[in-house]
Length: 432
Ligand code: HSE
Image (cartoon, rainbow, N blue to C red):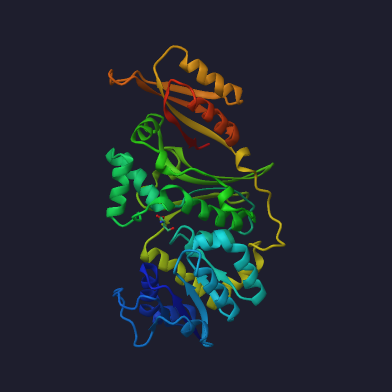
């Protein structure tokens, strides 16, 4: 039995959860793992806030060198989030000969190649289960349990805040702004919810999944990404009429021409397990060539689920499992050619278009003409007569067959320039 010493950088909500788990379960972990895992230092610039954890004397410090220059520390957990100084701290930890565990998806989505290259150079590992899907062991599943498969597709709900907002809108008929306020009141959404509702958090997580599952090197900023901020209560009602729910879906799909990646609010049929995922839950459906579809669901955020993932990475590192996974997978690296990623304008999607128009003769024919001119075929149309006779606007819902992102964009630009179009076109994805 050996003793492995751990240093934790970042004592916020997740850091406190990790400290509770590692300090509170030291004996159980020792029995299960066969080694002692000892949290010996926690570094944070705020030493005053009570995080609700009983800490041994002298464990808390605001001096980073107490961790990075401590030769006895084997593993550094980075939980400060954001890009800098997290990137510098991780590089320093690797260069100081420490293995790293992180929950920081923004860091990996932006600096993955550099950090993984450094880890290889130093013969160390970076484990990052908590960066995607919180407590759901999706990276371990793709990286080990499904290793014998060629992954064909991934469809996932990766942001609990967005899923909570959409669930509120469909369950209570709340409008978007009220649902965001409720998410903020309950502590799911930040005061500035942009990272979540604009889909940035989701697209960064998709980048990490695409890297691991398909060996795809892709800049998250080049992935087609729409957030939930364009979804209105009326879209939820139309979706319901079409036997669908709207979910923010991250989609990765292997095609003959390359990998298609996209994030968008998407109409998902009631019959799909993704439509049944409610509130702040995350879910991931992976399709492998031999295993077929596998479905994972769990809490994608929060103190305890995220701490669970971080601590399992610490255990994997101690047992050498992280090193095996790290060395065998086609993870980020400058000489690692992966699958070709299709440009976002060539990605195919079926679309739901809501166009707010004046109810005039010829409107439908002009709009369908624009779609036809871009090679977009209409699958179905819904237009209900306006109930409010004082409002000249009616919503026209056009469901399209699969069309490229580029053609959809061009058609929408043209439609939105028509004089009788009163509201900018809302474009959502359609599953299938
Ligand atoms: N804000 C994210 C969510 C969790 O709501 O799912 C952290 O990525």
